[in-house]
Image: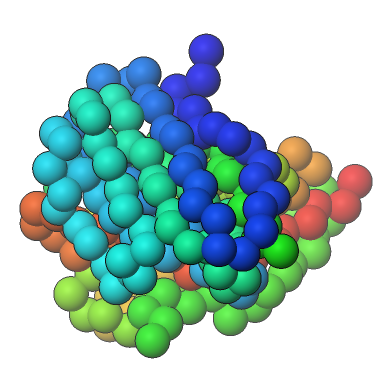
Length: 115
Length: 113
């Protein structure tokens, strides 16, 4: 029973398309995150939601729009995809937005390839 | 601007020996430090953490050491096992609400049988 699940696992699409990645957690956590792992392997935070409220919004192109219909779901929609958007996108969740010491629980990632 | 640095991209050790993975940081506001382990095609999994008020935290075979004055932490794995072969990420966070984890780029550990 997967704690943080992302779909799809792989996504290959053409430049200019619009795509969405879905994330769901069944841990009862109230905070969710999107991280991007680029070609240089850095994991960089993009967004964070706490109880459906956006609390972290890093410097990300506005082509990226997160949506949280409830605290168990955080989806990522990307408009007008560009080659540079190719990366692995990880969803994560945690209980509380300040309890970092207990770590985040990550999903297995979505590998996005833009051609 | 890399606030968390893992300067060695890889490490290879013999099974049964100690693995020492190093991490440096530049942000003096960081209060919490974590290590994550990642296997291919999986997400990072939380290993161990330490707060800035401590200099050591131990959990089984894993020990994290923190040297605040040097802005340096390390993860020791003793004894190393082949199943420990993975990418290890160091991460850090400031205290307070809306905290976020800042990650290094990871170290690939290979444990030889």
